[in-house]
Length: 286
Image (cartoon, rainbow, N blue to C red; front, top):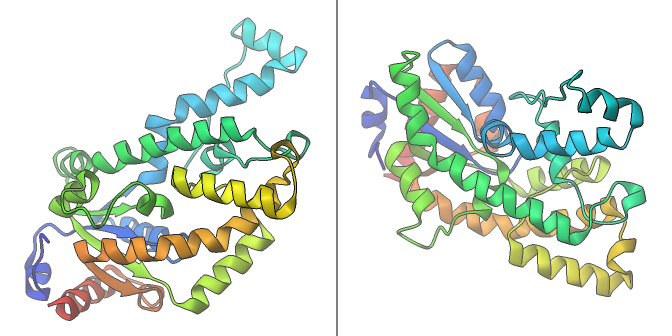
């Protein structure tokens, strides 16, 4: 770790962290707070994915839809209009919409082949965005004058690394550049996230082997054909299993850094309180 003790952290001129954990536990909230203080650079992995690495895929999907409308098709073909993605740190809908859900086309679903293709695109993009972290640390310092840096990772970071591999390229890169900080949720947090997801199911990212296994199991258990799957039902059915699948991966990743609880994060309102929380985590780790 680049900080071996609470004292190292407290005395550091440059404070750099990578926040990771389940979506909905406060990574972006804390990152926004630190950025708003004026002293921290906020690097959003999902934003980087949706702009640098998948922006063209996203915008091309918009254009394909527009080409199905004769009025919009004529305007596009004559270069009379432009269709752009308006993705932001707080609105990642263009990325999640592009990822989509597998199942019936009349319910907005994608074929499983297309879904797998987009999942593979996202996997590659996430790896590249994570490996860009050292570049953005230097960019933040040399261009904008920020010494402090927070990497706001996506919930699917655990799907693109192997925590048990001491030479994992992504985790090696990140841990050599910043302090890895796992935001650990309780069983109550997980239950609430599952309920929230059930009310409004969203696209997810999965390891290819996990997706293939769950897709086959869903078809068998429900006796449905691949092109007759209800997209929302499938992602609802898969979500709790995906959370259970990710938990040991997050826990393994914590061995590359420190962990804090979601309740600790929820209590952080200022950069000073964030500093204290990280110092306490390093003290516990020591």
